[in-house]
Image: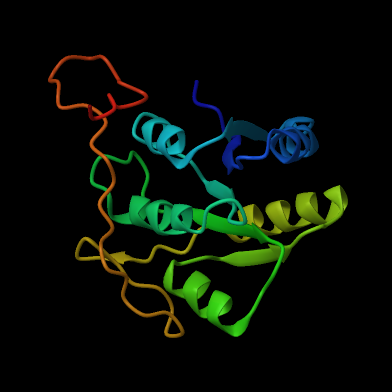
Length: 171
């Protein structure tokens, strides 16, 4: 029997923040929460399991957002229709435009209360994802522009059933 629980993936390089966000959502019976310290781990996971919502802390590395947005056009991802919730310490005009181009559904300013975080996750999941993929390219609402495809590292070139989680480093 398939589970009707929604899957929430959290990406944060700060272990304390990752633990708190995970704890806030893990108590809910209707959610399956998966925590990642890198976008590479998230990419590997999304290639084997569907995800409904991705929560990203962009303060550590702003380049992560482009890689997360590119998952919507990655043909190896199990489910390309998902929502993105961004956590950030600062929000400027340029930041808002960049997040909009990346297809972000909502931005929360840190620090935020755990209750607010849980409410926003619940609201986004209740609204459901809006499919924005047409012809293999991400196209958001009118306020968003077309994204350029950002290459995601190939995780495995093998034809067997082994999923390589972290690619070998170039020497």
